Image 1: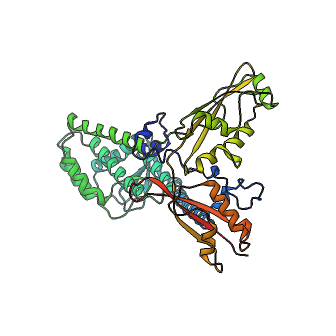
Image 2 (image 1 turned 90 degrees about the vertical axis):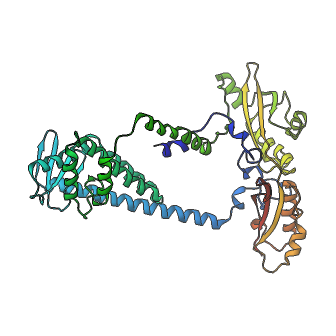
Image 3 (image 1 turned 135 degrees about the vertical axis):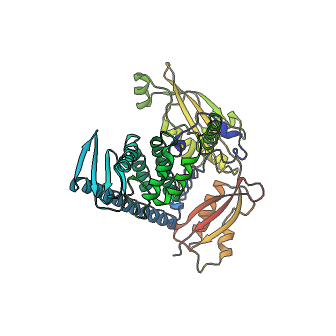
Length: 448
């Protein structure tokens, strides 16, 4: 349960900012900030779609892996259904007798006994057993039913359908079934005098035939460990305290895999109906503009670059244009300085006087330098000619403007299909510092 739940929990703290390297990978790379689109006209060089910068091969591989996953998952689900139907058929077609709320079903099998919820399956081939031994076998299976061991096994069976690729699921299921047997054995052994006779019964019931996988049953593979467990003394209370060591382990896992959710670019404060009407009709005015998290540029410089001032008519679409979409948007200011991991969030706070206060939070990260320049799709044009057209050079700070100019220069060579000139930035860790601070620039081309 911990393994399923821990990845779904998010921590409402900025603890991750204290970790080494958090400043450079504080936010994931958001390629929508780059606005790359080689189909752009000369008059609008900053409107580029990030989807075209993806390598189609990776999409094909991703889709292929998804198809394989779902086909195998469906196959595993069909196998599970087949096992359930098999047990259902045994219940319907075999002689049975109800006693004390449990159904006892006789089967023609060499497996001595197994249980499935309140159905106790006993083999007809146990004629050599005494009445006392038969009662003990039945009692063992009733304990499985009382403790709902079948529910445990079914739960893991459904998990094995979803996580069929994880071999630990099957290992965990085998260990859990073994613990079920230990628990049932413990309930049977009410006094020490029974240990010897019960151990003899286990040896007598040893069989190499496997019982249905959805049941709890006697198994030859577990006999030796169960015999050792019978003789093992119970854990002392102070020994059980060791299990509390799982708590710091769980906490470590939680901190390792739980990430803080970013704020969405939407109102965090509810507006009154009049403010909603004013916003929809473009009657709201810009109020106070505040900046948070910015270190590279001052508030006044960012406000100037934003191009929106107090008293202007406020529209959310215009704000997005000035933050991201325009060729000279705020994100260009940072991207031209190499800040490839830049993220910007904003919150709106409507006021009673018909104005909208804006708080814009900047997550800068660290500047990136160009690593390798990679040309793909070029067969006949000298590669050096293409390299000369690219204004970005290894070691330079990444620059959105120079990248767009490079795309335009390649288009002017008139050797490649303009719509197929796709720049693809590939962020990498620096080999010395181990931080994300290098970006390889891949240019995907298609000759005319």
